[in-house]
Amino acid sequence: MYSHRRTSAAVLGALLLTPAVLAGCTSTGDDEPTASSSAPATTAAPEAQPIDWSDCSEQIDPIIEGRPGSDRDLSFECGTTDVPVSYDDPEGGTLQLVLVRAVLAGQTDRIGSLQVNPGGPGQSATDAAVQAALTLPTDVLARFDVVGVDPRGVGLSTPVECISAEQKDELFAEDPRALDETSLEESFGRVDAAAEGCAEKYGAALGAFSTVDAARDMDLVRQSLDDEQLTYLGYSYGTTLGSAYAELFPDRVRALVLDGAVDPDAGRQERAEAQAQAFEAVFDAFAANCTGLMGGCPLGGDPRGFLNDRLAQAAADPVPSSRAGETREATPGLVLNAVRSALYQPSAWPQLAQALASAGEGDSAGVLTLADTYTGRTDDGTYTNVIDAMVAVTCADTDEEFTREQVQELAADWNGKYPLFGADAARGLYTCTAWEAPRTPLPARDAEGSAPILVIGTRGDPVTPAGGAVDMATQLLSGTLLTWEGNGHTAYPKTDCVTGAVNAYLIDLAVPADGTTCPA
Image 1 (cartoon, one colour):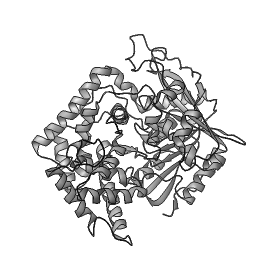
Image 2 (spheres, rainbow, N blue to C red; image 1 turned 90 degrees about the vertical axis):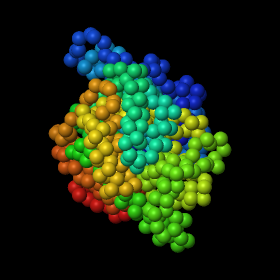
Image 3 (tube, one colour; image 1 turned 30 degrees about the vertical axis):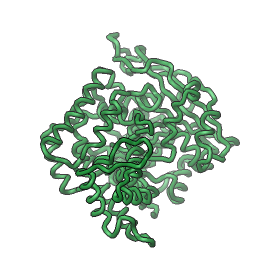
Image 4 (cartoon, helix red, strand yellow; image 1 turned 120 degrees about the vertical axis):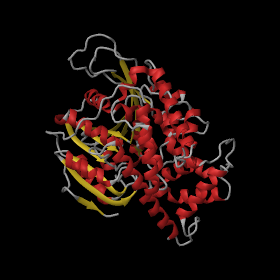
Protein backbone atom coordinates (compact mmCIF):
# COMPACT_ATOMS: atom_id res chain seq x y z
CA MET A 1 0.00 0.00 0.00
CA TYR A 2 1.29 3.43 -0.94
CA SER A 3 0.55 5.41 2.20
CA HIS A 4 -2.24 6.44 4.45
CA ARG A 5 -2.87 7.91 7.86
CA ARG A 6 -4.26 5.39 10.33
CA THR A 7 -6.61 6.93 12.88
CA SER A 8 -8.86 5.69 15.65
CA ALA A 9 -11.80 6.72 13.47
CA ALA A 10 -11.13 4.02 10.89
CA VAL A 11 -14.49 2.43 11.68
CA LEU A 12 -16.36 5.60 10.78
CA GLY A 13 -16.19 4.82 7.08
CA ALA A 14 -18.27 1.70 7.54
CA LEU A 15 -20.67 3.36 9.95
CA LEU A 16 -21.22 6.31 7.64
CA LEU A 17 -22.61 3.83 5.15
CA THR A 18 -25.58 2.95 7.32
CA PRO A 19 -28.96 3.75 5.72
CA ALA A 20 -29.77 6.51 8.20
CA VAL A 21 -26.69 8.47 7.28
CA LEU A 22 -27.02 7.74 3.60
CA ALA A 23 -30.35 9.54 3.68
CA GLY A 24 -28.53 12.77 4.37
CA CYS A 25 -25.10 12.13 2.96
CA THR A 26 -24.74 9.73 0.08
CA SER A 27 -24.50 10.09 -3.66
CA THR A 28 -27.76 9.98 -5.54
CA GLY A 29 -26.19 9.96 -8.97
CA ASP A 30 -24.97 7.05 -11.06
CA ASP A 31 -22.75 4.55 -9.28
CA GLU A 32 -20.12 4.56 -12.01
CA PRO A 33 -18.61 7.33 -14.12
CA THR A 34 -18.72 6.79 -17.83
CA ALA A 35 -16.07 7.61 -20.36
CA SER A 36 -16.22 11.06 -21.88
CA SER A 37 -18.65 11.41 -24.74
CA SER A 38 -17.52 12.07 -28.29
CA ALA A 39 -18.64 15.69 -28.03
CA PRO A 40 -15.87 18.15 -28.93
CA ALA A 41 -13.82 19.40 -26.01
CA THR A 42 -14.46 22.93 -24.83
CA THR A 43 -12.13 25.37 -23.09
CA ALA A 44 -14.92 26.90 -21.02
CA ALA A 45 -14.10 26.68 -17.32
CA PRO A 46 -16.56 24.56 -15.36
CA GLU A 47 -18.76 26.36 -12.89
CA ALA A 48 -18.79 25.40 -9.22
CA GLN A 49 -22.06 23.79 -8.25
CA PRO A 50 -23.89 24.45 -4.97
CA ILE A 51 -23.48 22.00 -2.12
CA ASP A 52 -26.65 20.28 -0.96
CA TRP A 53 -26.14 20.27 2.83
CA SER A 54 -28.17 18.45 5.46
CA ASP A 55 -27.65 18.14 9.20
CA CYS A 56 -26.23 14.71 10.10
CA SER A 57 -25.21 15.32 13.73
CA GLU A 58 -27.82 12.85 14.95
CA GLN A 59 -26.18 10.11 12.89
CA ILE A 60 -22.54 10.96 13.67
CA ASP A 61 -22.89 11.75 17.38
CA PRO A 62 -23.59 8.11 18.40
CA ILE A 63 -20.61 6.94 16.32
CA ILE A 64 -18.14 9.21 18.13
CA GLU A 65 -19.70 8.89 21.60
CA GLY A 66 -17.06 8.09 24.20
CA ARG A 67 -14.11 8.93 21.96
CA PRO A 68 -11.55 11.48 23.12
CA GLY A 69 -12.85 14.88 22.03
CA SER A 70 -16.47 13.78 21.77
CA ASP A 71 -17.38 16.15 24.61
CA ARG A 72 -16.69 19.09 22.32
CA ASP A 73 -19.76 21.06 21.24
CA LEU A 74 -19.69 20.04 17.59
CA SER A 75 -22.23 19.99 14.82
CA PHE A 76 -21.94 18.03 11.58
CA GLU A 77 -23.37 18.53 8.12
CA CYS A 78 -23.20 16.11 5.21
CA GLY A 79 -23.37 17.35 1.66
CA THR A 80 -23.06 16.51 -2.01
CA THR A 81 -21.95 18.43 -5.06
CA ASP A 82 -21.29 17.56 -8.70
CA VAL A 83 -18.05 17.93 -10.68
CA PRO A 84 -17.22 17.12 -14.30
CA VAL A 85 -16.03 13.61 -15.07
CA SER A 86 -13.63 15.17 -17.58
CA TYR A 87 -12.23 18.67 -17.38
CA ASP A 88 -11.49 18.44 -21.09
CA ASP A 89 -15.25 18.24 -21.59
CA PRO A 90 -16.79 20.01 -18.58
CA GLU A 91 -20.23 20.05 -20.19
CA GLY A 92 -20.21 16.26 -20.47
CA GLY A 93 -21.01 13.83 -17.67
CA THR A 94 -20.69 14.59 -13.96
CA LEU A 95 -19.88 12.61 -10.87
CA GLN A 96 -20.89 13.33 -7.31
CA LEU A 97 -18.64 14.18 -4.40
CA VAL A 98 -19.64 13.69 -0.76
CA LEU A 99 -18.54 16.08 2.00
CA VAL A 100 -18.69 16.31 5.77
CA ARG A 101 -18.39 19.65 7.55
CA ALA A 102 -17.69 19.89 11.29
CA VAL A 103 -18.25 23.16 13.18
CA LEU A 104 -17.31 23.93 16.78
CA ALA A 105 -19.90 26.01 18.60
CA GLY A 106 -18.89 29.52 19.57
CA GLN A 107 -16.55 30.25 16.68
CA THR A 108 -15.14 33.78 16.75
CA ASP A 109 -13.31 35.62 13.99
CA ARG A 110 -13.97 32.76 11.61
CA ILE A 111 -11.37 32.58 8.82
CA GLY A 112 -13.08 30.05 6.57
CA SER A 113 -12.91 26.34 5.79
CA LEU A 114 -10.01 24.00 6.48
CA GLN A 115 -10.11 21.20 3.91
CA VAL A 116 -8.47 17.99 5.17
CA ASN A 117 -7.26 14.85 3.41
CA PRO A 118 -5.80 11.82 5.26
CA GLY A 119 -3.93 10.25 2.35
CA GLY A 120 -3.92 6.82 0.83
CA PRO A 121 -4.72 7.38 -1.95
CA GLY A 122 -8.06 5.90 -1.04
CA GLN A 123 -8.61 6.94 2.57
CA SER A 124 -11.86 8.72 3.33
CA ALA A 125 -11.64 12.48 3.88
CA THR A 126 -15.16 12.52 5.34
CA ASP A 127 -13.91 10.18 8.07
CA ALA A 128 -10.88 12.44 8.46
CA ALA A 129 -13.04 15.52 8.98
CA VAL A 130 -14.88 13.82 11.83
CA GLN A 131 -11.62 12.67 13.40
CA ALA A 132 -10.05 16.11 12.95
CA ALA A 133 -12.98 17.71 14.75
CA LEU A 134 -12.19 15.47 17.74
CA THR A 135 -8.41 15.90 17.74
CA LEU A 136 -7.33 19.22 16.24
CA PRO A 137 -6.52 22.02 18.69
CA THR A 138 -9.55 24.04 19.67
CA ASP A 139 -7.63 27.18 18.70
CA VAL A 140 -7.88 25.98 15.09
CA LEU A 141 -11.48 24.78 15.37
CA ALA A 142 -12.49 28.16 16.79
CA ARG A 143 -11.42 29.82 13.52
CA PHE A 144 -12.20 27.20 10.85
CA ASP A 145 -14.94 24.84 9.78
CA VAL A 146 -13.34 21.45 9.11
CA VAL A 147 -14.35 20.04 5.72
CA GLY A 148 -13.54 16.60 4.36
CA VAL A 149 -14.28 15.84 0.72
CA ASP A 150 -13.94 12.23 -0.35
CA PRO A 151 -11.95 12.58 -3.60
CA ARG A 152 -13.47 11.20 -6.78
CA GLY A 153 -13.58 7.42 -6.63
CA VAL A 154 -12.89 7.33 -2.88
CA GLY A 155 -15.18 6.52 0.03
CA LEU A 156 -18.65 7.82 -0.75
CA SER A 157 -17.72 9.95 -3.79
CA THR A 158 -18.80 7.80 -6.73
CA PRO A 159 -16.56 5.04 -5.36
CA VAL A 160 -14.55 2.87 -7.72
CA GLU A 161 -15.31 -0.74 -6.77
CA CYS A 162 -14.09 -3.54 -8.98
CA ILE A 163 -11.85 -5.89 -6.95
CA SER A 164 -13.84 -8.55 -5.13
CA ALA A 165 -13.44 -9.45 -1.48
CA GLU A 166 -12.33 -12.93 -2.54
CA GLN A 167 -9.60 -11.46 -4.77
CA LYS A 168 -8.40 -9.21 -1.96
CA ASP A 169 -8.33 -12.10 0.50
CA GLU A 170 -6.11 -14.05 -1.91
CA LEU A 171 -3.84 -11.08 -2.66
CA PHE A 172 -3.26 -10.25 1.00
CA ALA A 173 -2.83 -13.86 2.12
CA GLU A 174 -0.09 -14.75 -0.36
CA ASP A 175 3.48 -14.94 0.91
CA PRO A 176 5.19 -11.77 -0.36
CA ARG A 177 8.63 -13.25 0.27
CA ALA A 178 8.05 -16.37 -1.83
CA LEU A 179 10.19 -15.73 -4.91
CA ASP A 180 10.11 -19.08 -6.69
CA GLU A 181 8.80 -18.98 -10.26
CA THR A 182 5.49 -20.68 -9.44
CA SER A 183 4.67 -18.30 -6.57
CA LEU A 184 5.53 -15.24 -8.63
CA GLU A 185 3.50 -16.38 -11.62
CA GLU A 186 0.49 -16.99 -9.37
CA SER A 187 0.93 -13.54 -7.83
CA PHE A 188 1.21 -11.82 -11.22
CA GLY A 189 -1.87 -13.75 -12.35
CA ARG A 190 -3.92 -12.46 -9.42
CA VAL A 191 -2.92 -8.89 -10.22
CA ASP A 192 -3.77 -9.40 -13.89
CA ALA A 193 -7.20 -10.81 -13.01
CA ALA A 194 -8.04 -7.87 -10.75
CA ALA A 195 -6.95 -5.38 -13.41
CA GLU A 196 -8.96 -7.15 -16.10
CA GLY A 197 -12.09 -7.05 -13.94
CA CYS A 198 -11.73 -3.32 -13.36
CA ALA A 199 -11.13 -2.65 -17.06
CA GLU A 200 -14.23 -4.66 -17.98
CA LYS A 201 -16.38 -2.71 -15.51
CA TYR A 202 -15.13 0.83 -16.16
CA GLY A 203 -13.22 0.89 -19.43
CA ALA A 204 -11.52 4.19 -20.19
CA ALA A 205 -13.37 5.86 -17.30
CA LEU A 206 -10.71 4.40 -14.96
CA GLY A 207 -8.57 7.30 -16.08
CA ALA A 208 -10.99 9.75 -14.44
CA PHE A 209 -9.59 9.08 -10.96
CA SER A 210 -6.34 11.01 -11.34
CA THR A 211 -4.90 13.32 -8.70
CA VAL A 212 -4.81 16.20 -11.17
CA ASP A 213 -8.58 16.00 -11.65
CA ALA A 214 -9.11 15.56 -7.89
CA ALA A 215 -7.14 18.78 -7.35
CA ARG A 216 -9.38 20.55 -9.85
CA ASP A 217 -12.36 19.23 -7.90
CA MET A 218 -10.90 20.78 -4.75
CA ASP A 219 -10.95 24.18 -6.35
CA LEU A 220 -14.59 23.86 -7.34
CA VAL A 221 -15.39 22.84 -3.76
CA ARG A 222 -13.43 25.83 -2.48
CA GLN A 223 -15.62 28.10 -4.60
CA SER A 224 -18.78 26.31 -3.47
CA LEU A 225 -17.73 26.88 0.15
CA ASP A 226 -17.33 30.62 -0.59
CA ASP A 227 -13.66 30.58 0.41
CA GLU A 228 -11.60 33.18 -1.44
CA GLN A 229 -8.50 31.01 -1.10
CA LEU A 230 -7.75 27.44 0.01
CA THR A 231 -6.62 26.51 3.52
CA TYR A 232 -5.64 22.85 3.54
CA LEU A 233 -4.23 20.12 5.79
CA GLY A 234 -3.01 17.08 3.89
CA TYR A 235 -1.31 13.96 5.23
CA SER A 236 0.79 11.45 3.30
CA TYR A 237 -0.72 11.10 -0.21
CA GLY A 238 -2.70 14.20 0.77
CA THR A 239 0.58 16.09 0.30
CA THR A 240 0.63 14.95 -3.33
CA LEU A 241 -2.93 16.18 -3.77
CA GLY A 242 -2.18 19.48 -2.03
CA SER A 243 1.00 20.18 -3.99
CA ALA A 244 -0.81 19.37 -7.24
CA TYR A 245 -3.42 21.95 -6.27
CA ALA A 246 -0.70 24.51 -5.60
CA GLU A 247 0.81 23.85 -9.02
CA LEU A 248 -2.53 24.26 -10.80
CA PHE A 249 -3.85 27.20 -8.74
CA PRO A 250 -0.90 28.94 -7.02
CA ASP A 251 -2.72 32.25 -6.64
CA ARG A 252 -5.59 30.55 -4.79
CA VAL A 253 -3.42 29.18 -1.95
CA ARG A 254 -3.89 30.77 1.46
CA ALA A 255 -2.10 28.12 3.55
CA LEU A 256 -1.18 24.50 2.85
CA VAL A 257 0.16 22.11 5.51
CA LEU A 258 1.71 19.08 3.83
CA ASP A 259 2.51 16.56 6.60
CA GLY A 260 4.35 13.34 5.79
CA ALA A 261 5.33 14.53 2.34
CA VAL A 262 5.56 12.08 -0.55
CA ASP A 263 8.79 12.70 -2.45
CA PRO A 264 7.89 14.50 -5.70
CA ASP A 265 11.31 13.87 -7.25
CA ALA A 266 11.36 10.09 -6.82
CA GLY A 267 10.02 7.57 -9.29
CA ARG A 268 7.98 4.57 -8.18
CA GLN A 269 11.00 2.31 -7.83
CA GLU A 270 12.91 4.81 -5.71
CA ARG A 271 9.90 5.47 -3.47
CA ALA A 272 9.20 1.76 -3.03
CA GLU A 273 12.80 1.02 -2.03
CA ALA A 274 12.93 3.99 0.34
CA GLN A 275 9.74 2.82 2.01
CA ALA A 276 11.02 -0.74 2.40
CA GLN A 277 14.21 0.59 3.98
CA ALA A 278 12.25 2.89 6.30
CA PHE A 279 9.92 0.10 7.46
CA GLU A 280 12.97 -2.06 8.29
CA ALA A 281 14.42 0.78 10.37
CA VAL A 282 11.16 1.39 12.22
CA PHE A 283 10.80 -2.33 12.93
CA ASP A 284 14.23 -2.15 14.56
CA ALA A 285 13.00 0.83 16.62
CA PHE A 286 9.97 -1.21 17.66
CA ALA A 287 12.22 -4.13 18.62
CA ALA A 288 14.51 -1.90 20.69
CA ASN A 289 11.51 -0.37 22.42
CA CYS A 290 10.08 -3.80 23.21
CA THR A 291 13.30 -5.27 24.59
CA GLY A 292 13.79 -2.16 26.71
CA LEU A 293 10.48 -2.56 28.54
CA MET A 294 10.77 -2.82 32.31
CA GLY A 295 8.58 -5.92 32.39
CA GLY A 296 10.35 -7.58 29.50
CA CYS A 297 9.39 -8.01 25.85
CA PRO A 298 6.76 -10.69 25.14
CA LEU A 299 8.79 -11.52 22.01
CA GLY A 300 11.94 -12.25 23.99
CA GLY A 301 15.33 -10.69 23.43
CA ASP A 302 15.26 -10.94 19.62
CA PRO A 303 11.95 -9.65 18.19
CA ARG A 304 13.19 -9.89 14.59
CA GLY A 305 14.13 -13.51 15.12
CA PHE A 306 10.77 -14.14 16.77
CA LEU A 307 8.96 -12.63 13.77
CA ASN A 308 11.00 -14.69 11.32
CA ASP A 309 10.02 -17.81 13.26
CA ARG A 310 6.36 -16.80 13.07
CA LEU A 311 6.63 -16.21 9.32
CA ALA A 312 8.21 -19.63 8.82
CA GLN A 313 5.52 -21.16 11.02
CA ALA A 314 2.74 -19.41 9.05
CA ALA A 315 4.22 -20.56 5.73
CA ALA A 316 4.32 -24.20 6.84
CA ASP A 317 1.10 -24.23 8.85
CA PRO A 318 -1.04 -21.04 8.88
CA VAL A 319 -2.09 -20.01 12.38
CA PRO A 320 -5.79 -20.37 13.33
CA SER A 321 -7.75 -17.67 15.11
CA SER A 322 -9.90 -17.78 18.22
CA ARG A 323 -12.09 -14.97 16.87
CA ALA A 324 -15.73 -16.04 16.70
CA GLY A 325 -16.82 -16.93 13.16
CA GLU A 326 -13.32 -16.46 11.71
CA THR A 327 -12.46 -19.01 9.02
CA ARG A 328 -9.14 -17.50 7.92
CA GLU A 329 -5.76 -18.54 9.23
CA ALA A 330 -2.77 -16.23 9.44
CA THR A 331 -0.47 -16.70 6.46
CA PRO A 332 2.90 -14.89 6.04
CA GLY A 333 1.19 -12.16 4.04
CA LEU A 334 -1.32 -11.43 6.78
CA VAL A 335 1.39 -11.50 9.45
CA LEU A 336 3.47 -8.95 7.54
CA ASN A 337 0.43 -6.74 6.94
CA ALA A 338 -0.22 -6.81 10.69
CA VAL A 339 3.36 -5.71 11.35
CA ARG A 340 3.19 -2.99 8.73
CA SER A 341 -0.11 -1.75 10.13
CA ALA A 342 1.25 -1.34 13.66
CA LEU A 343 4.49 0.33 12.58
CA TYR A 344 2.56 3.37 11.38
CA GLN A 345 2.30 4.69 14.95
CA PRO A 346 4.28 3.85 18.11
CA SER A 347 0.98 3.80 20.03
CA ALA A 348 0.21 0.48 18.27
CA TRP A 349 3.55 -1.16 19.12
CA PRO A 350 2.32 -2.84 22.35
CA GLN A 351 -0.63 -4.27 20.41
CA LEU A 352 1.77 -5.67 17.82
CA ALA A 353 4.00 -7.29 20.42
CA GLN A 354 1.03 -9.00 22.06
CA ALA A 355 -0.46 -10.07 18.72
CA LEU A 356 2.79 -11.71 17.62
CA ALA A 357 3.23 -13.35 21.02
CA SER A 358 -0.30 -14.78 20.81
CA ALA A 359 0.40 -16.06 17.28
CA GLY A 360 3.42 -17.85 18.70
CA GLU A 361 1.03 -19.60 21.07
CA GLY A 362 -1.29 -20.60 18.21
CA ASP A 363 -3.87 -17.80 18.12
CA SER A 364 -3.79 -15.29 15.25
CA ALA A 365 -6.80 -13.18 16.33
CA GLY A 366 -4.64 -10.15 17.15
CA VAL A 367 -2.65 -10.51 13.94
CA LEU A 368 -5.81 -10.60 11.83
CA THR A 369 -7.23 -7.54 13.60
CA LEU A 370 -4.13 -5.49 12.78
CA ALA A 371 -3.96 -6.77 9.21
CA ASP A 372 -7.62 -5.96 8.59
CA THR A 373 -7.13 -2.43 9.91
CA TYR A 374 -4.46 -1.99 7.26
CA THR A 375 -6.36 -3.47 4.32
CA GLY A 376 -9.84 -2.14 5.06
CA ARG A 377 -11.42 -5.55 5.70
CA THR A 378 -14.55 -5.37 7.86
CA ASP A 379 -15.89 -7.85 10.40
CA ASP A 380 -18.34 -9.36 7.92
CA GLY A 381 -15.59 -10.20 5.43
CA THR A 382 -16.28 -7.35 3.03
CA TYR A 383 -13.84 -4.54 2.32
CA THR A 384 -14.04 -0.80 2.03
CA ASN A 385 -13.03 0.46 -1.41
CA VAL A 386 -9.68 1.80 -0.17
CA ILE A 387 -7.68 -0.74 -2.20
CA ASP A 388 -9.69 -0.25 -5.41
CA ALA A 389 -9.31 3.52 -5.11
CA MET A 390 -5.62 3.32 -4.19
CA VAL A 391 -4.81 1.35 -7.31
CA ALA A 392 -7.05 3.45 -9.55
CA VAL A 393 -5.51 6.74 -8.39
CA THR A 394 -1.92 5.50 -8.24
CA CYS A 395 -2.05 4.05 -11.73
CA ALA A 396 -3.91 7.02 -13.24
CA ASP A 397 -1.07 9.20 -11.92
CA THR A 398 1.86 7.42 -13.57
CA ASP A 399 3.02 6.12 -16.92
CA GLU A 400 5.83 4.07 -15.33
CA GLU A 401 5.62 0.33 -15.92
CA PHE A 402 7.80 -2.60 -14.84
CA THR A 403 8.03 -5.96 -16.57
CA ARG A 404 7.69 -9.22 -14.70
CA GLU A 405 11.40 -9.83 -15.21
CA GLN A 406 12.32 -6.46 -13.72
CA VAL A 407 10.06 -7.05 -10.72
CA GLN A 408 11.48 -10.53 -10.17
CA GLU A 409 15.07 -9.19 -10.20
CA LEU A 410 14.23 -6.33 -7.83
CA ALA A 411 12.33 -8.64 -5.47
CA ALA A 412 15.32 -10.95 -5.18
CA ASP A 413 17.71 -8.04 -4.64
CA TRP A 414 15.54 -6.21 -2.10
CA ASN A 415 14.71 -9.42 -0.27
CA GLY A 416 18.36 -9.56 0.65
CA LYS A 417 18.69 -5.88 1.53
CA TYR A 418 15.35 -5.47 3.32
CA PRO A 419 14.40 -9.00 4.43
CA LEU A 420 10.98 -8.22 5.91
CA PHE A 421 9.54 -5.70 3.47
CA GLY A 422 11.75 -5.58 0.37
CA ALA A 423 10.24 -8.33 -1.77
CA ASP A 424 6.71 -7.09 -1.16
CA ALA A 425 7.70 -3.53 -2.10
CA ALA A 426 9.22 -4.75 -5.34
CA ARG A 427 6.27 -6.94 -6.27
CA GLY A 428 3.94 -3.96 -5.91
CA LEU A 429 5.66 -2.28 -8.84
CA TYR A 430 3.90 -4.65 -11.24
CA THR A 431 0.41 -3.40 -10.35
CA CYS A 432 0.25 -0.48 -12.77
CA THR A 433 1.77 -2.55 -15.59
CA ALA A 434 -1.36 -4.70 -15.49
CA TRP A 435 -3.72 -1.73 -15.07
CA GLU A 436 -5.58 -0.74 -18.24
CA ALA A 437 -6.50 2.94 -18.01
CA PRO A 438 -5.62 6.32 -19.50
CA ARG A 439 -2.85 8.08 -17.54
CA THR A 440 -2.47 11.67 -16.36
CA PRO A 441 1.05 11.79 -14.89
CA LEU A 442 1.60 14.21 -12.04
CA PRO A 443 3.20 17.49 -13.08
CA ALA A 444 6.44 18.85 -11.72
CA ARG A 445 5.42 21.00 -8.79
CA ASP A 446 7.17 24.27 -8.06
CA ALA A 447 3.92 26.23 -7.47
CA GLU A 448 5.48 29.49 -8.65
CA GLY A 449 3.49 32.42 -7.28
CA SER A 450 2.00 30.53 -4.34
CA ALA A 451 1.85 31.84 -0.78
CA PRO A 452 4.24 30.07 1.64
CA ILE A 453 3.60 26.32 1.99
CA LEU A 454 4.55 24.41 5.15
CA VAL A 455 6.05 20.95 4.53
CA ILE A 456 6.52 18.55 7.46
CA GLY A 457 8.69 15.44 7.65
CA THR A 458 9.14 12.96 10.50
CA ARG A 459 12.59 11.47 11.00
CA GLY A 460 11.25 7.99 11.86
CA ASP A 461 8.37 7.84 9.38
CA PRO A 462 8.19 4.36 7.81
CA VAL A 463 5.65 5.29 5.15
CA THR A 464 6.86 8.62 3.79
CA PRO A 465 10.55 8.83 4.73
CA ALA A 466 11.78 12.25 5.82
CA GLY A 467 13.83 12.76 2.67
CA GLY A 468 10.60 13.20 0.74
CA ALA A 469 9.74 16.27 2.79
CA VAL A 470 13.18 17.72 2.11
CA ASP A 471 12.70 17.26 -1.62
CA MET A 472 9.16 18.65 -1.62
CA ALA A 473 10.11 21.74 0.40
CA THR A 474 13.01 22.30 -2.00
CA GLN A 475 10.96 21.84 -5.15
CA LEU A 476 8.15 24.15 -4.03
CA LEU A 477 9.48 27.66 -4.54
CA SER A 478 7.61 28.90 -1.47
CA GLY A 479 8.12 25.69 0.54
CA THR A 480 9.28 25.79 4.17
CA LEU A 481 10.55 22.62 5.86
CA LEU A 482 9.67 21.61 9.43
CA THR A 483 11.12 18.32 10.75
CA TRP A 484 9.99 16.31 13.76
CA GLU A 485 12.61 13.99 15.25
CA GLY A 486 9.99 11.46 16.34
CA ASN A 487 8.71 8.08 15.12
CA GLY A 488 5.51 7.29 13.29
CA HIS A 489 3.62 8.43 10.23
CA THR A 490 2.97 12.21 10.20
CA ALA A 491 3.49 14.72 13.02
CA TYR A 492 0.59 17.14 13.57
CA PRO A 493 -0.78 17.52 16.24
CA LYS A 494 1.32 15.01 18.22
CA THR A 495 3.84 17.29 19.88
CA ASP A 496 3.73 20.82 21.28
CA CYS A 497 6.53 22.11 19.06
CA VAL A 498 4.90 20.98 15.80
CA THR A 499 1.43 21.90 16.99
CA GLY A 500 2.45 25.42 17.92
CA ALA A 501 4.14 26.01 14.58
CA VAL A 502 1.24 24.66 12.53
CA ASN A 503 -1.39 26.53 14.53
CA ALA A 504 0.44 29.83 14.06
CA TYR A 505 0.74 29.18 10.34
CA LEU A 506 -2.90 28.18 9.81
CA ILE A 507 -4.35 30.99 11.89
CA ASP A 508 -1.93 33.90 11.52
CA LEU A 509 0.04 32.82 8.42
CA ALA A 510 3.20 32.96 10.55
CA VAL A 511 5.71 30.73 8.79
CA PRO A 512 8.42 29.01 10.87
CA ALA A 513 12.03 29.44 9.83
CA ASP A 514 12.94 27.06 7.01
CA GLY A 515 14.68 24.00 8.43
CA THR A 516 13.16 24.25 11.91
CA THR A 517 13.50 20.98 13.86
CA CYS A 518 11.23 19.83 16.67
CA PRO A 519 12.54 17.30 19.23
CA ALA A 520 11.07 13.83 19.58
